[in-house]
Length: 321
Image 1 (cartoon, rainbow, N blue to C red):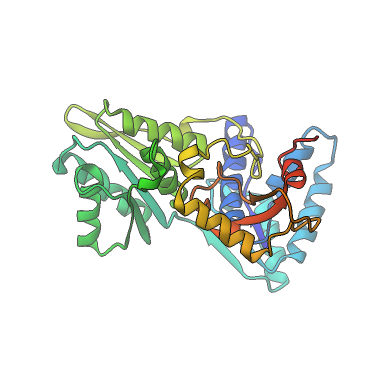
Image 2 (cartoon, rainbow, N blue to C red; image 1 turned 45 degrees about the vertical axis):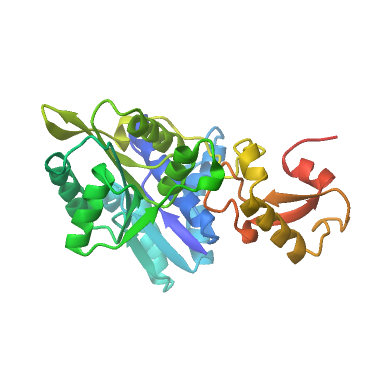
């Protein structure tokens, strides 16, 4: 089990909210990978209105360090002066628990307008690549525009690429679906915007909604200038890692696609055509363990499906008969 250490306390609420948000985002990435973890900020947020002494939480955190097999330190600004983080690291080292410092983002996604030129994009792309030193760059599959320039520069620098193309079976809303998958596949998003493209502006809004950190460059005076980043949004994110919206995003086109039917058959065959809770063999449903609304990438992965009867499927979604 991984212990996630991160600084929290600061005088201003904006800094505290930012630190909690970053810890929640990192926790969700571990969750989506199926890794076990413990995060004090994620846990204690539920008790922030209770009158609990600081000493209690210090002791609680140290005991949880003892229970974990590794520690990851989120090197957010202020981590090296945080007494809490120092104490957690010291405890881990004393117990022989390996400590890993998370200092950079290794998967960057680039999003941009087709109207931009290579001369306009190149300085911003090279600036971001030098800053983050990514292991992988994720882009849309278009052969032209900002994404095309990103791929050209990455090939010259020897940076591995991951491309996402349109999935035609999704029919309506293909670009939206692909944008979600690209953002899910990255740890930091970069937007190169001509200031007018509705597509790039929509992707930026989507990144904010999904909680993906970002850098935003807008065309001003013929040059791309960084004008926004993740620090511009101080809101305190809700703890909704398992929020289940009854898969409203699953359109009729997806439900009736050949790909979805193959996914459904694979889950039913694996589970022996019976409810995994009560064993009933009639009125069966295929339930997404991680909701469709949370991960398009896992929408058709049989490992993310579970056979349930209609009654237990409704209970999973909070619908009582």
